[in-house]
Amino acid sequence: MVSASQIQEPGGFLQPTLPSPPSSSMNSPRPTHSILPHPRSKPLKSASPKESDFIDYVEQKLLAVSRHYENRFSAALGEEENPDVEGRGYKGFGEEAQDLEAVLDVVWISGTGNVVFHKLGSDDLRLRMRTVHLQIVFLLTIALTVSTSLPSFPFAPRPTFKLLHKLDLAFASLLKGVNAETGEPLPGTENGRSRLSTTEKVRMRGIVERTRVAVVEIAGKDGSLADVKNAVQSQTDTEDDFNMTEDDDMFNLEDESSHRRWEMDIARVYERTIVELGMALDTSGPGNVGWGP
Image (tube, rainbow, N blue to C red; front, top):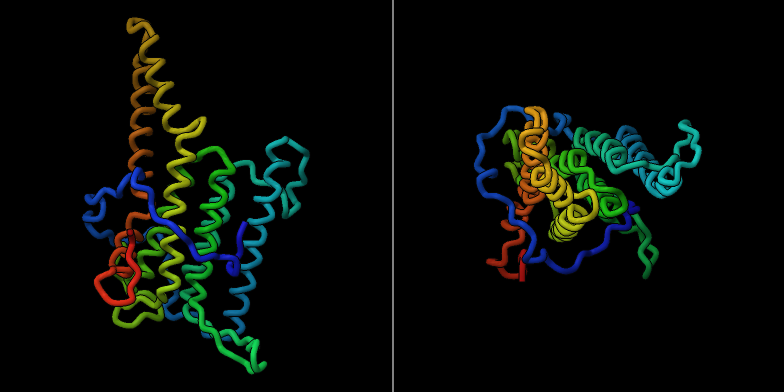
């Protein structure tokens, strides 16, 4: 598991075999409500007690998620666990996704932007200031945690895509400076301008690439979408048509429909973020960082 201070600079780019986000989904009518909770009208005041409480709360919640993840083996082995123990292991990614989504909601509601940290300089021991975008630091930590955890559990499409869709909207909104679904301005933004640094955008791109690769890989493992499709096809081929009931036909249609839906969701992982990063990291200007080679 990872913490906010452990986010590393990424390397590499998306593999050419990954599905591209469908362009049609980006042109859908703008909804009046967002899947993200409504943020505060103003960000938490920097260096205020409320901001300190917020930081402590989120860090403690992320630490608890890390403990549950590290203890997942005990849950998999069916060992007796005390439900009151904070460090009990996750039995599946759905449990972890639920906890991470709760943290994501708190981070989004806070609207906390740039925070100034003081640290000692290594050369002259003078205090130096370092400004970070606290909201994006926590969101990147959550996104990297998702990418790291996914391969450790059987593929759970519904909670996986729900959480990734929410992260996608959060990242795209921060890149645009407004809610990417509703167009509402974000707290602390001026004229819809993004507050993210180039370094933060590059880190975001690395996590997006890594997550898209991870989703494609775990969807191809045992119990994946391909196995569901093969099982449905095999059942259809071997069953006597005269013995098939109306309920059986409906069951197969639902399985095939779910398979197609999950395939579309795989292609749409971080689709909004990819579009916004493609514009933010355009190579048209000097010194900018491009999306691909």
